[in-house]
Length: 470
Image (cartoon, rainbow, N blue to C red; front, top):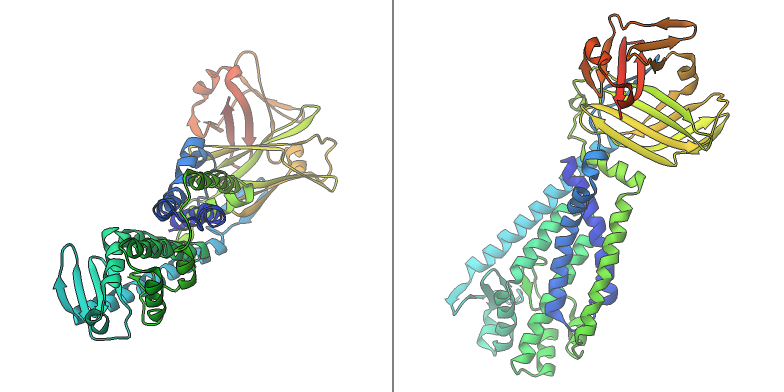
């Protein structure tokens, strides 16, 4: 469910950007068929742009969200971390409760509509069914292929009402309303979802109003009919009703002249808004939050814990190029995905944010490479980062002291030479060897070409050698 919530959040953000462009440039134009198409396009793009963008950009594989971690060991430091942030679990449960409530309300309104239709006299017409009901308090409306009208209106001159409601039926406005309702269920927390629904219904009314005017009815007489029908029970968002509440806008629109192709060119404003919304999703803090939610699970306490025993981090490389400082961190036992953000470097009381960050995953092992402004002569130095919403700190003093990682070099004869102070080991012994996260034998290690090795490290706590290839 975390993935569904993350998807709803991002799609809602895209929908917000496009809706603002629609309201500013398009909504007031007398081009109702075109506007209806634009609204449906907004729905489609909102829920398809982000997956397509991720597929093209490769973000799903490299920067997707969080797997679950129970314990994290960093050298001699052991941190207890929850399976997933409590806030993400709270958001998922809140999202599901909201979905359930809106769905229930939808079902209740559907039953009310069905009850009204069943209570009336049904008259089969060409392509639709006219339902005549006795309750004068219910305003005329259409639902599916039913046109519902009270008996008082039916016995009077109901031609304008019938034309209006038939436009809804024959234009399949019910499909638009169904899409809008589904979006409201999935995006119930997003005000734009409800504003979009209202906009769709308003365009439907514009179309139906113009159908009545185009059929030869007097504008003034029809407007008086709308005013008279401005009261009465409605079924908002699930049925099209002649007494839709945006009465002033509908009357004003009847007097607007139609624009040519120039009015439709305004739809191009939607393009930069989509690009803007997608760029917001790549902001590290936003991306980290969304990915953490996306890979969180429903949890009731201990149910969120992972079967992993531990996760280990070690600093495998610290390099000063004379221009910048590069730190390479290796994480093991991370599962399938991680989200890394807010990487910082602290030295002599000064904090530096990463200028560049690259994270790769291979078989549950991560390589995190961060580039900082040049810094040397380390004093109380450390590297910190947010991993799946949790902060992890690695002390560089421990790195230089050898408690986390020993210095490793490659001899010309393809043998391993491990230097620790004045001691030198030329054999691997009973240490386990891992190449890019996969366990290999000592013989396989000796066959490695030094030119293919990017970095090597030793974790003395677990008696393991880690080799990362280029």
